[in-house]
Length: 517
Image (cartoon, rainbow, N blue to C red):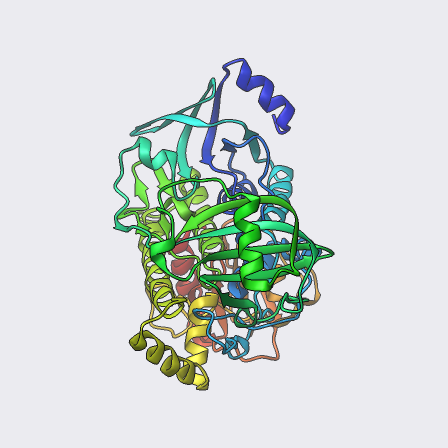
C-alpha cells in the first residue's frame, strides 16, 4: 500500500491498518523521520490531513548542519537541483548587517541554502516511499489512544494500530491537543504575512537577486517588508506592521487579500511595483512554546509539535529535521530490541535542551530585530553589530544558528565525544559497506548505519560488530584528533580513542554495546 490511490481507497472503506510506527504530519520533520525509520527496516505509516502538498514558499533555508546531515543520506544532491537562484551569503542574526561566517567550523556548506519547503518535502517523500514508508494524505487524525504496548489512532474512517506514534503535526498539533498536554511558553506579540506573489512591474527598490537578509529588508510608511526574487516574475513577500498596535490579533486566521498586499507593495516599494497574482498567502506569529516532555509513553513529539519560536534565523525547519535524525535510529533500535536502557529517553534528554536554546536565541533576535526599536534597543543593536564583527563572536553565533557547534552531553572524556566530525576526504580499504578508493566521510552514512572509523589499523581484525555498525579502515590527510572514532547514525561521535586504547578491542566493544544502533 505505497500509492496515494490505494491509500485513499482504504481510507474510504474504513480499513484497520497495523504498522510499527505511525507518524502524524507529512512536513519535513515527519517525512525525514519516515525515511530514517524505513532505512532501518521499520514499517512506517505517515498520516497527513492535507490532500496535497502546500506549495507555499516557507521554511526556505537549509542551514549548514542540516545540509551536512542531508548529504550523509544522499538527499542533498537532488535538493540542490531545486534551489532558488541566489548569490552565496552568510547567515544572519536578527537581520543585522554582518554575515555569519561558518568557514571556521570546517564545513563544506558554509552558507544557508535557499530552497522552498515544498521542494524539500517532495524530495524527502520520494526517497521515503522508495525505501518502504507509506504516506496517506487526506487522513486527518481525530482520535489517539496510548497504551502500555502501543497506540491506536483514528483518522477519517481509518483505524491504525502501531507500537509507537510520533507527532510531527506542527505548532497546532492535533495529537498534542488530543492528549491534553500543556504547551507552556509565551504567546505571540507580533504577526506577519508570508505570500508567494507574481509582479507585473517592479520599481528600482525591488531586489533583483537574493543576498544577505539585511540587504532585503525595507521599512516605510508603517510597514516592514522583504521581497525575495525567485526567478522570472515570482517573489516571496514577507511583511508586517512596524507598530505592534497595528497588528491584528495573533490568534486569528484572517485570509490575506490582494488589497492588503497591494497596499504594502506601494507603501514600501512604490507605485511602480504592481501585483499580478497571489499564489498563496498566510499569517504567522512569533509565539514561543515548548513541550515539557518530548515523550509520553508510546507517543513522541518532534518538530513544531514539540517547540515553536519566532521565525528568525531560519531555525524551525532545521530544528525539526535534526530532531528526526536524532530520534529515527533510536526508535528503530528500540523496536528491534537492540537498545540499551534509556536510549529512547535520550531523545528528549538530548533534543529538549537544543530546542530550549533555539527558543532562547530567537527570542533575543526578536528583540534586536524590532522594526520600531526603543532608544535602548537601538543602542543594543549597535553594540551587537560591533560584536558580530569580531571573529570569535561571529564564529560563536554562526555555530549556534547553523547547528555546527552542537555537542551532545555524551559519556566519555575524549574531547571529540558528542560533537560532529568534519566531512573529510578518506582513502578507504575494502570492507563492509565500503569499497577501496577515495570517498568522503559523509558517504559512509548512506545506509543510516553507525560507523567505526579506524584511521590507523588499530582495531583488531577479528572484532565482530553488529549488523548496523560498519567498520571502515581508511587513511585521512586531516587530523581528526583520534585514531579510532565510533560515529552514531546521526553523525555525532559517541566514542573516540588513540591507537593503543583501541588495540585490545575491549573499549570498542563496550562503546558499541552502549550505543546499540
